[in-house]
Length: 144
Image (cartoon, rainbow, N blue to C red; front, side, top):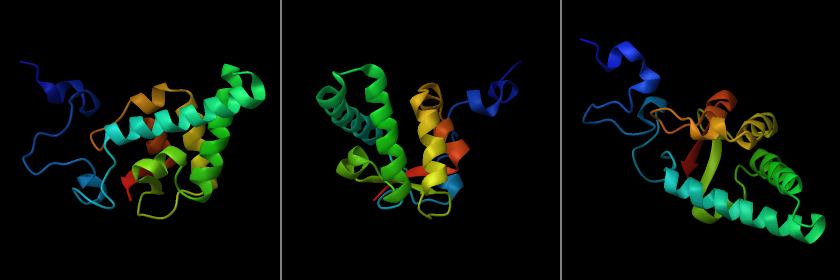
């Protein structure tokens, strides 16, 4: 009989051990500062960032969708690369760090943002709730 292990780990869902939690394999705490940011915070942060970029786009580019995406990309590259968080991240209390806890930095922020703008890498994630854009950039979103 075929079971989940035959299909592959990326299709099998989160581990089912009783002591499992997102970020455990990365050495992150279960809760509190430094733990993996959960999807709810991420979505709220994205909505805040997108709304701010939409306002800027409306003010300067007549709400052009490509301009809005460009403003969003610039915001993410600059703010995440220098401060470790965008406007929305800061509001909900999360930040982007490299694996090991160091600041993300400009190169990782650029890679992460370009993949984030493609959307699909951001919605495909692993058991530690890291999207493909974070895996490629070797980053993780954690609580402040």
